[in-house]
Length: 393
Image 1 (spheres, rainbow, N blue to C red):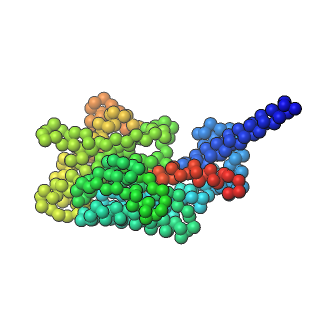
Image 2: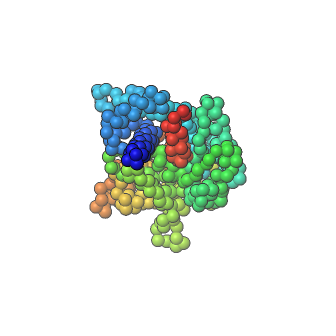
Image 3: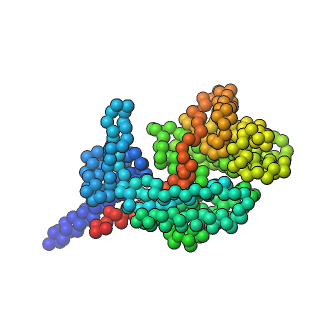
């Protein structure tokens, strides 16, 4: 009798263990598909080290349950057939991403099929008060929330991409240089009060890199370095699924006293300070879009070699295979950008190193907002997917 009871308990434990293992595998598959917009069944099986038949069986099951969608989309060869890529059903979830820069605020609502459901863009003028910027970010998040609700999408969280340095991510507290000068700002509580959903914040350079990595994953094990030059200067190294960030703007530039840093020479803040020192009160956007202006020419004479030096110093340290530049230099004429690349390649070659492939980011201006939406989604996706997997959902 005891043996019978013991065997029953063992069978129950085995059944529970098998169920938990199946739930973990299901969660892993759905999270992989969620984070890889061009994933196929084969990609999923190989990346998760699962058997292809098992992945196919679960994908078919999730299709029947209307959780996964499979469609012809990705061309696998010049004349070959299209691959069937996977995505979660769009209305299973949605997150909002808000990207704050010194000159613009941008926001998106991103659904679980990685489709943008709404976009917001607004320039920031140099005379705006810091407290008004906090209100603007909160109002922007709220407007995107309302837009998603109009499309019957439930917002799981809000992500904030903030100009660094971020002193406290939990509170979204930053100390940053805006067009009007250095300001201390705190965002998370204001956004949560306005939206009544969980809000997460991190530096916008990391959000940009996260968005770029998810939308354009590097092949194999190649390393990419993304350099962002706006009112600050930073770099993010992407190697596999690791994102390592560093503040290049705080590194010293030159040997003259008083000591200067790269952020004092080759950022948007440096351009504005130079203009103000000449008694010029023009807005930053006006200056950066006028490369023939004497103020901009004077700034470029120092900013270009300084920015190139900051980049090749970081490249020599981390040896990326590809280097992508995003920010204010992307807005300058082709000859300025070509000179920048030439300076980087010449110096690295002179020092006996092979230069990485250098290019300027040519995507849309919503990558930081995408990364912020991904950031928020990463925090809540497991809970949402777990509820989807529960019977009787």
